[in-house]
Image (cartoon, rainbow, N blue to C red; front, side, top):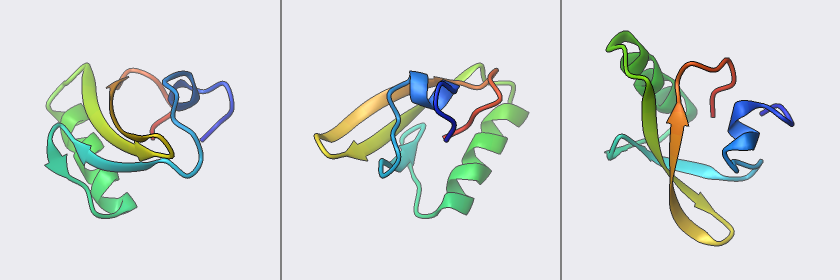
Length: 70
């Protein structure tokens, strides 16, 4: 993740774990990438990420029009 990038702007930090994309379980970085690419192919403007961080679980809306991905 780039400092000052879109992921950082959305509050995602190193060590955060994305556990779901669009309410579908994510089990690996490759799985996350696959789900993001599928949403982009479907011309989705954004996706909803369930992120586990030091404070617990939280939902993060994430636009797909930026260059920085989680």
